[in-house]
Length: 402
Ligand SMILES: Cc1cc2nc3c(=O)[nH]c(=O)nc-3n(C[C@H](O)[C@H](O)[C@H](O)COP(=O)(O)OP(=O)(O)OC[C@H]3O[C@@H](n4cnc5c(N)ncnc54)[C@H](O)[C@@H]3O)c2cc1C
Image (cartoon, rainbow, N blue to C red; front, side, top):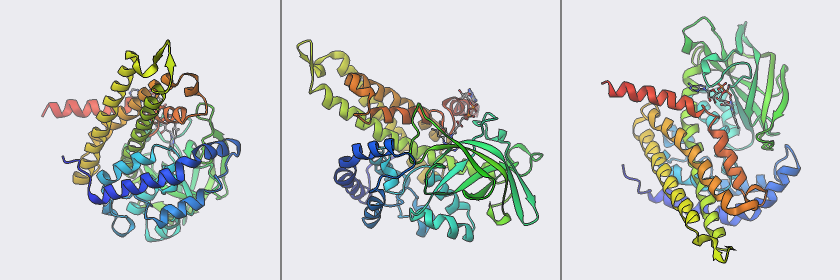
């Protein structure tokens, strides 16, 4: 493994850092206040910033070069430090059209979508003109086991009819969200992993009812939000199916791998920023006649945080490198490892930073609560920690028996 970044990646790192310094950090507070006070509305300058990022070539960088002309041509290893920089301001990845859940949905459509589906949905998504959501999780069943999903997708002539209830549909509250990728069952009697299919559903289709937005620890995560949605006799043309009946589970696996590593890359950026902020803060305040940075407990917290971030970063780069060289399937154990390690590391590091900031650490004056929330929720989203440990443990035992 050689983690020396290519010239192309280094140039983009410097371009993104400059963009963040010039256009993102200066409006961070104003942006956060606006979205807090204007639910389901975009910050007024967001579109201008997106156009600027696009004009500078800082756009869709997440899509690896295997996607040919659709991709700006980076490997996962080249993209990792760029996503880390974007992770320093949680909402900034959307400015570069690199935000979840659209990135995962774009990969699904780029990999499995028909020419018509790509023209209708992928093109505007890649241009940043619309947003999307991914509807897998259901309130009625333990959705960490995707084979439990109960939503039905039934063929009726040249249409499919969809019935079910979803929740935690991230991005579905976004006023720019135009369509969903819905996972359901086309054949509940088939073998366990081929019962599922994925289908495209325009958000304004009759029978799509947004029941309510869900709060995350009291936050609406506006303007994207997370919705509970009822699908009541929703009819779409048969050509809306992605690939074939029974391919849904395999497509979901292909979608979630890259999504997981992107979350980890961004979380490392959040953790690094928390540590940098902690160092500045403790060097600027005194308690009991001493600089706070001089207390050994604080230095231990800082040292430990630095070790943990670097460990997580190296593991994430190793995962990116393995995906680039051998494909997502071969890298599945490493993807599980980072999914277990990175969100927990972020929570630990950010928690120490919050402690060092005292009361300021828990209020809206720093991005620290947002970083902690992101780490905490990723411990559940895209598969809870325990599920990854369960599968990684099983694979590790299997491999040791060979
Ligand atoms: C902020 C956020 C955003 C999300 N965004 C989306 C989205 O856009 N689209 C979407 O479809 N879903 C989304 N989700 C849903 C998320 O993927 C699910 O919550 C997750 O897969 C767990 O499913 P569940 O909630 O049904 O929990 P359950 O499946 O009921 O699991 C509950 C708990 O049971 C335990 N458990 C389960 N399996 C095992 C095991 N094998 N070993 C030990 N313990 C186990 C774990 O502690 C687990 O947390 C999001 C969730 C959050 C919090």
